Length: 186
Image 1 (cartoon, rainbow, N blue to C red):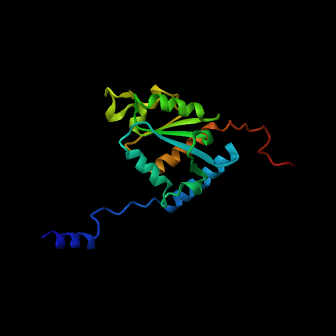
Image 2: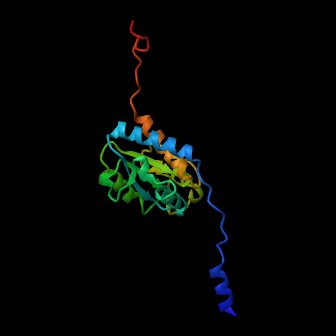
Image 3: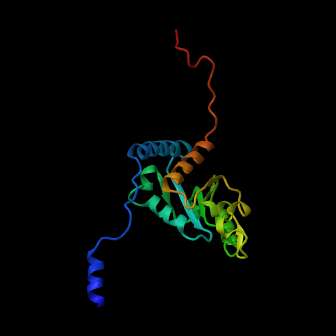
């Protein structure tokens, strides 16, 4: 009897665990730091072009979660763009497949300067579980110079947001403290 089983499954709740909620104070502090750093560095929001170079889509699920309602990427002053010509960051996931090498190089050539390349996930770092396969060139560093590596299989959305903040902060010029600047005028 298929119909009673089908009706029972449709009426019951799914058998999945509840999602872990990130701490609100951590997300709020991260949002404030990201927005201030992006505005100071670029004078506007940070635009990201995401490229899947041949992954298993685990990292893409986390990237999509980062743009979803829970993490809400746009409130941090970050946004995904459809064209590499509008991007500041090239976020690459997955090992670079032989058929994706030229496409990835062309995409990087279209991104205006300053451009930062971020390799997200273990596969983007060195090929991960696909390392040594005949169809894989290797990780992103085998094709492009990488500015930031976000490890994990897959990295969480919070790890990716913290990585992007670290990237922006690393690009800031070092501040010099002037002698006597801390002293109060007398």
